[in-house]
Image (tube, rainbow over all chains, first blue to last red):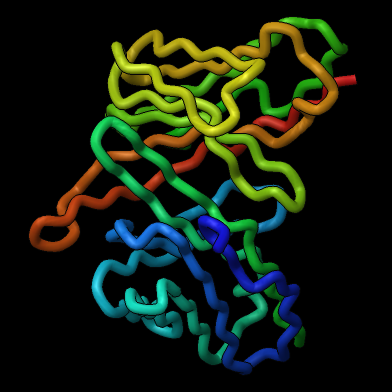
Length: 112
Length: 119
């Protein structure tokens, strides 16, 4: 299994649709997980964090399944402004080592 | 004003040239990072620094060096640029915080990026 692997996408959905992205990770020691959003030609920005089973923020829900080592991001009632690339991020810190692994991203386009 | 700034924003250089990318932050964070982003490869860590006296290699440090001149400044140098170093480079800062009992987490704040083209 790759360190962090995301749905390859791209996802093209109509406005109002519900869309879900999955991300699998290989390091069972990882404790916290993140979804970042990156607009075209812009810097990534934190969208959501998830530490326990899940986290919800408005139309966005992130869930964690430690047993299967995957996290998901659910977007309900998609808006045109949700069009972006979504990056799954898995940090790992052990002893003197530190590593932050970004997935390659999933491109979402929300169409009118 | 932006909390994390990068200069230059765009740079074209020739193979063999030495160039420096600079990063400044006003967030007061101790931790700073340099990443590169390539199409299809995602973000990859080049170097990171947890304080002024700390420098650590990331997964792709070959061909790069860094300098942490102060808490607020972290620069990345390409000693002898080559075409496969053409990429989008991001600086980031972070500050650990307790997220849940017994668990420390952190949010990374990225600069706007530097687009580098090596001819």
